[in-house]
Amino acid sequence: MRRASPVVRDPQSGMWMVFDYAGVQRTLSDWKAFSSERGRPRGENAESALSSSIISTDPPRHRQLRALVEQAFTPRQVRALAPRIGELVDELLAPVEGSGRMDFVLDLAYPLPVIVIAEILGIPASDRDRFKRWSDAVVTGDLSGSREMAAYFGRLIEERRHVPGEDLISGLIAAQVGGEHLNTQELLGFCILLLVAGNETTTNLLANTVLCWQGAPEAYERVVADRDLLPTTIEESLRFRSPVQSMFRVTAQDVELGGQLIPEGSPVLAWIGSANRDEAQFPDAARFDPARTPNRHLAFGHGVHFCLGAPLARLEASLALEALLERLPNLRVAPGTVLDPIPSQIVSGVKRLPV
Ligand code: HEM
Image (cartoon, rainbow, N blue to C red; front, side, top):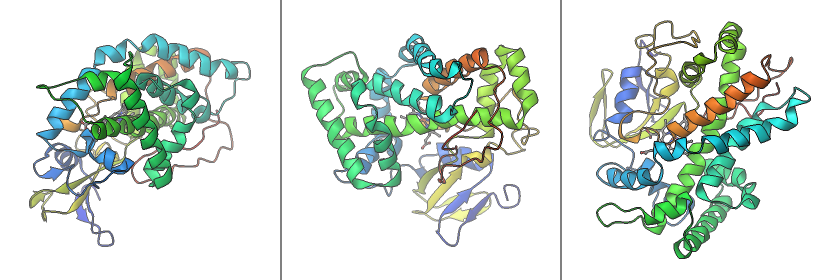
């Protein structure tokens, strides 16, 4: 499919599908032709708050918003989180160390990113459990859950306007470019975006890495023997089992791509998961190679929308997987496990993973 018909129109949905590396890279980065902004809902609910966030805007508005949020979310600030993330990994692994058994998703890969984002945003620990429900609510389009979350963040933003703290929400309220601040709807959109974009994706990166190891035991043995391979292993996991499989755009003009003419106003899905297996870009693409270099995968996107949370996701993955290699060096998926994939076209992962 990728080689023979890299760009096709699905007759049922009317959606254009892009499968090859060059096409996906262009779809994600050529914002003049492939808009992130067109066709997004506008209104007062959580979905529309999300649509006023950076992920759903095109330049020049995108550039301004991104400059504002980047001030509050710099790689340096993320690096400073390492000791706290290490502590959280220790806390989450402590109960399972005795038995040597755990559900990798429920015990570690799911709670870790939720707690990290909650702490970054300055959410009280007592409210963390509501996060999963809210995050699911936005993804599944459950309006009452989304409204509850929007109302919660709305209250929190007002509180921080009056009494600022050291947290990201206070940082976002204070940030400005050319004298301009984020308005309440944009603040809300960014909080919800972080919750949705940062949680399930990082959970799946962690669990998918264990699945990559399961499918390539010799790769796992190599990393156990040589921890220096962990960074390239994480990149290879992002390529091989990409947590975000596809991203959506709408054409802002007639576009020629992969020998096809896509008319203006067409919905387009860029298949990141497929691009990351493109032999034209990755020699021996179907093999999980923990030492693969170079590895220019598109798992975090490409161009102006390149994932803002990539340094955080990489940091969480390296600290969690390092601790795992250290403490549970004979990690195996429990025999007889039947994998239960997350039912989604966009994210790739499993609901549980007994190890
Ligand atoms: C954007 C993937 C973790 C925040 C993106 C995009 C991808 C992606 C593919 C590009 C979207 C597009 O082109 O439309 C991932 C993966 C992750 C991850 C695979 C984990 C393994 C995170 C985390 C955060 C985060 C931890 C924040 C805490 C964002 C934000 C954007 C974004 C804010 C929008 C950037 C923009 O539009 O300028 N992510 N992400 N992501 N991601 Fe991530």
